[in-house]
Length: 390
Image (cartoon, rainbow, N blue to C red; front, side, top):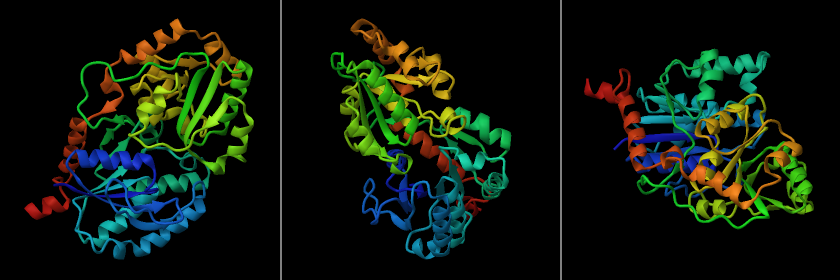
């Protein structure tokens, strides 16, 4: 059984749980180690007790650098009691630095996989800091065996033009994970509630102040014909007063966190549309990503709303689904959605449900293929497995 050491920047990130689930479903044994954004250590993630590397704070780059430096001194002792892994996956740049320290603690040439699912705005700066971070990434990634990323635009706009990673690249999209095999028919999706009011769901990592203000303005213009439902984890560092703002808006509601995948069908079947727009890093990461909510919403028949000039918009154009905005304004939203009625919504939803379910979901066969791809890296020259067989 392939033994993977998974190093992550935030063990409580729902996407980390999804990746662990995929690795285990594919037949791998996983040891999880990483930082946390909580006060106390987290006891369990998918049956794993994480090796705690300390606390970090969202949006505090300097504090995170200090935490990485501190962890680099202690990671050898913290990993000392575990068996030597066959492979190390480093999620994000800061964990790539720790992956090399971890490998040295095992006194073996364990292959490293670099998993990069966001391009941080700091590495795209043209000043000394940005150039230093890109140089650091190139240095740390000089001998990784594989780069895993989630959007073709990350490759086209960052990794290839900047020459950051010479390793092969695997595109592993942010698809929903199906515990059972995906059947050839349409995905299960209940009937949406009758509108109006029409509900737009914005779920997941809520970090975009511009989206919040835009949706609030639009809902006021519509005077109750549209409601905005927020669920997930708001990045309070990005909002002066998130909860106060939402409470003051008559047609916005925040309904707290949810479990993924346990609650996904219920929360998406409760809305008509899925907000798949992010201006958090406009012109860069936000225009290049293909977010989790795109796949999750479409999996359960919610009609996606996106900007037409983004990677998500281009993807939806290819699929011939969704509502695409020419500009980010309440007026554009009103022009696109304001006259919504049952027959038009049924057509929009029907097009989403008509797509192949594999467009939105991975199943166990995909997980096995991913693990086999990782297993093949352990047989490459320089890996521990290859040395053991020599």
